[in-house]
Length: 326
Image (tube, rainbow, N blue to C red):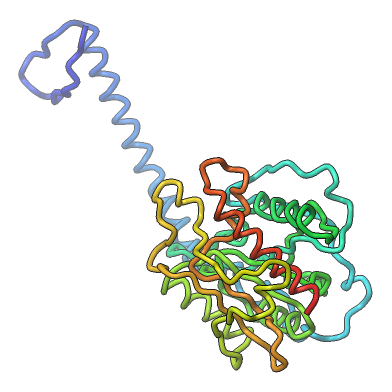
């Protein structure tokens, strides 16, 4: 039997038609609706109070929460110089990814992922953009380095924070993802600059279009306000350390599986750019309008085209070897 769902006014002079079961359904619906309205009105003052407290509360995302700027580049004690032990964080895409059995075995190289502060959302929240693709992407590239080079790579990655003493200086190659959403603090910018000037190498990836480029540049200018961002020429050693990469093409993210487009937003053309020091050494390799991180992450995904993962691994390995030899 089907019951009419139309609710009739309680004070209507029209006699309710139908059987007792329909009347019972109508009664309980009306009663539930009244209880819901009462609960909303009762909670309204509490919600208003919480909103006022949230609006006036001090945000934890202040410069003072990110370390002491005066200590950057200064002599430190031996404890601060030691590498941090392996650690994990919940990621945007993976919250409990299996740890390799040999994760604690050290190596000549490991995937060092830079932890940065992200731009606030319209509600003021800052998301963990630095964890995009983490840790699946990191471990796939580490496995590729083991198989395709003679470098003894650790199987597990290492999240690296600029605020952790001198830990950042233990890694010759540093990677950051989604830098079109970063908002470096003064300490992060100063520590990254000091790291690069001492011989470090920074690779950034997975940001697209004009708006994300402008966000990236705003923080990168805090790192190097006087060094220009230029296109990396094809004859630069970074494209020829292990593989000759004269014929490069745009490497898309996994969105390609649905859209069959290699670009995102208005990032139609891939750009390999960089920042050099005074002696011609490449300090920063900027992978704009491409997503190498996804090409590593989805290397075992049968729906993601192999040609993109193949180029992504070759680019990553060239950059790693360049970082360790220049």
